[in-house]
Length: 428
Image (tube, one colour):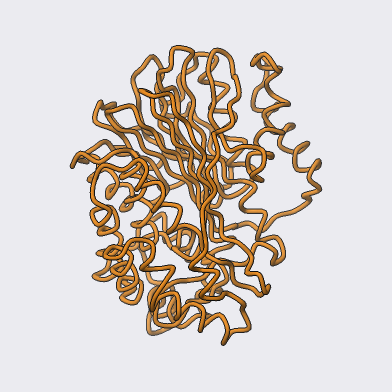
């Protein structure tokens, strides 16, 4: 396994990579039990909802790309948190429906198995990892304003608990138990949904029970782009992140898939990123947009790349009473909605159909830029799995890139070199 940018040992049994080690290990354990890449991604997500809730809470949303080598099928699942019809500061959550659809369509194991690790972390506790510690120290002003977050992450003296401290969120554990037992309806209908709607109303929000019950993810064929001799599968242009990534890549790769700059790729990517931000009139961004990305592969040739966001650290910073669920910030609230534009899950295959890369940039434009850099380097035959060969975003852990790269058909998981993530093989 690899920590902080080191690659895992190559394996035929599947790999998982992400920003928070305990969640990645949960995904790898599912692979070892015969789970698919979709099972591993689902287990990783629900574990992150407990161990990395600053960026992956179940009150948020995201995007996943799925590719199956045997069938050639590729699909983009979009389940972003949406503005409530009546406005307000809280978003209607999409992630539980999204991962429910992913797992029902592509999973091999029972749903309960994939949700259980996250439930266990929330209910009985987990040690604060270095990855989480950096984020909660930076977000402590948000934490102090919410009773549930404060009770979990602050000491009696009001200080952020240090790395290794055991923390728990029993109310979230109970909500995850409902999700495990009833599927996504355990979140979008019944008592949990009623509690979220009631809290929203009390806090001048506008989430309704009806909106929760009717939430549905979007399914689209993945967009394809030729890069060298490879094909990249990404979000379609009708999703904000797909448009941003396409605009950036179009400056780096021509219509035939050839790189437009052979001399200084780093400088070219930086220039393309700035030009794309200028195109969309984005002059400044919050340092932490509350997002994270992760990816998984399995022995059957299925690959999944996901990026999720809360539209800010811990989203709105408000936990729905009795649920343990921090609600994502409404996309229309200030710059919150920009986070979705930089969720960049992607999968690339060779001209022969073999996997080349599965990964995700998240957190800001540098995550998208780092993923573009990795795709172009791999397409040029350069190995990014060795230490120092994959560029960090430069502002990790807020923007990160996590990939599984397969030069010459041998795959290795590489977490962001500037962060504290993990790449793990099945069973590790």
